[in-house]
Length: 294
Image (cartoon, rainbow, N blue to C red; front, side, top):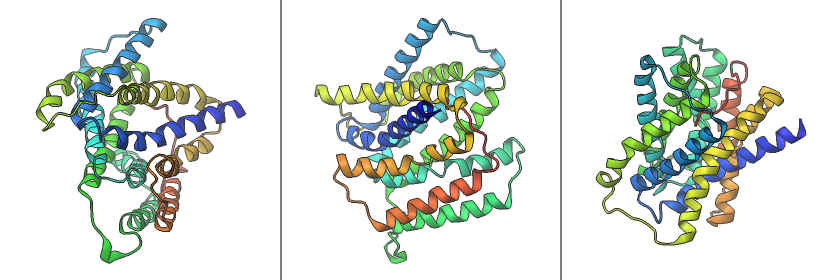
């Protein structure tokens, strides 16, 4: 049990750090090109793992369209908007906005999967919105300024929620690993032409440390950490593991302080508590712990 919690904590630290590492990478790589390169290394890792485990399954023709949409919206647009946003958006604020994904997912699930919305859900949403206000406005309404990058991070959050809904539907017939492999392949194929159409100018770092960081984060964040999480959540209490996953913004905050020398403000701490509290409040009773597919 303790070993499982240690591994889950490691995963949360990796995913929380991804915001800061992404912020570093977009200084040296243009967003669409970075998206294509990252997806390439993720796909190479997944195909290699699939070959090693002999875990390669075909997808039924009836599911191909859903997999295609998942690859375009939940993989390509999700990752591209993430890097576009991080060009100007603060990584801690970005992590906090993405922390509200479970709330939007519940709303979409109510619409498309006919799942029930509750009063607790509404209350949690209000608490989380108050938290976002504190983080974005720094507690001062007159200073509210929506950074263009944060608008892209909101799109990242929306596409992430859509990805979860499509994955839920597909997981009734396809295992998570196969969904992840095919959707990332689609995302990679779609990203290739856009890598040269969306970026002006195209930026490609010649430095070895930047490439090591790119490859390392691609494989560890979307490959190794995901597999470790999926393998260990079955050994722990679901509600406790869920709360662990909500600690990503705090990890982003600490990593931002260490790597980017960004001070932690009182408004950020207060906003973080409201956002995480709102997410826990709204999803605690209804949330079932699912393996991550991406």
